[in-house]
Every structure is written in structure tokens, then in C-alpha cells.
Image (tube, rainbow, N blue to C red; front, side, top):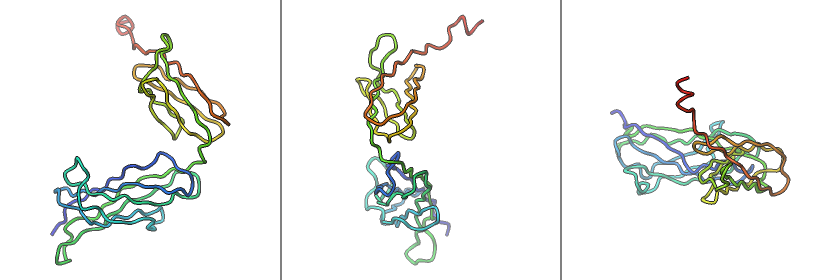
Length: 205
């Protein structure tokens, strides 16, 4: 008997964590035929194949889904700074007789980024370059950290001391870029010019 295809999904992985910190992620398992995946064993393996966390999916599917069963697993981030590969794995599930695989094994890869401690607060105030009105929903990035400005055009990131490169982008606006060194809390005003696109005359010239 050919087993039903299984899909594994991973979410709630933090953008970045300090080395050795506890990380909690959610691992979901879904059968292509919408069978129950309750009670299936899920594992997280490191880049050498060692199991670093394990558990079992719950008895009820994730709210808003038809058959996505999940487990929240805790593991510790690597102690070395950098980007580290991890694999979420679910073994094949067999029928009641234990002979045929009713559901296939499956896996999904994800990454954990470890960084130095975030010691400084970088506050960004995004405004229109002409009116100085706040720009809501602008994307603020200091890699690997990112967030969006609120209704007041304000966003805050916690970042490590040292050199940084800031990007602020908004819909239909030219990007704002700046670089610098940070060793204490800083506020930066990002003035965003509107990008109206080419005029009819430019398009037809």
C-alpha cells in the first residue's frame, strides 16, 4: 500500500537569537488526504543529523486549518555566531498491523541565526520628505532585524553595538539608506520622498 504524502511546515522561528539561548518553534504535520496527524512524533535535527528536540503533535488541528496538527518544541541555539541549518522531521506512520506505511515520512529545513547580544535601541521615525507627515507601514531593516513603522511612523529595533546599515522602504517611495556606528540608544529620522514613477511624457519620449 502506498502511503499518503505528508507535509511538514515550520513557523515562529525567531529572526535572530543570542548564542545558546532557548528557541521555541512550532512544527506542523499535514496529510495530503486530510487524515488526522495527531500524536505523530516530530524531531528537530542539527546539521550533523543529531536529534536536538522531539515531541508529538497535538490531538486537535491548528485553528483555521483542516488537518494541520502541530507541536511546539524547545531547543537551544548554537553557541557559535552565524546561520545554522536545522531539519524538522516526521517519521512514517504505519497501519494498525504495523506492516504498511499509511503516511510517508517528511521533513522541512529551516535556519537559526545566532548574533551578539542586542545592547542598543535604534529608533526610526519615518516621515514624508515634503510634508513631514508620518509614514505608516514602512519597512525598517538592519540585517537580520526588521520591523514596520506604526501609525506614528515610528519603529524600534534592538541591535548589537558596532557598525550598522539601515534601510527604510515604503510603498511608492524612494528608499532611505544610512550607515554608522552605534554604542548607545539612537533615534534617526528617515525622510522618504514619494516615487511617482515615470510621467506620460517620459514613457512616450
